[in-house]
Amino acid sequence: QVQLAESGGGLVQAGGSLTLSCATSGNTGSIKAMGWYRQVPGTERELVAGIISNGLTKYADSVKDRFTISRHRTWNTMTLQMNDLKPEDTDIYYCGANLPWGLKWGQGTQVTVSS
Image (cartoon, rainbow, N blue to C red; front, side, top):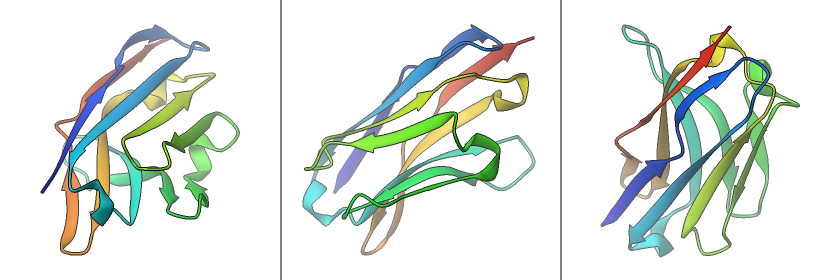
């Protein structure tokens, strides 16, 4: 089993920065990829940034050049550095891990950007 725990959310003014962290535990050797997702209530969860085993990354167009995803080589931690935050970045951010049997989610962390 794999457990995920997010931290680092909070309230920040537009133009500010936050760093989200996702700590993993359990059978982290089964992780194939990880990502940060966000979900506005009533909509589907969308990928914000993802990273796979070889280090390749993928970003949503809305966050390119502002957000940076990184991970420890053993998947013990994953971070999302968020710069130049905008009010539209306000959301609950979820850490997700791709496992052979499906996606595992963390509990989410709230990011609020004031204008």
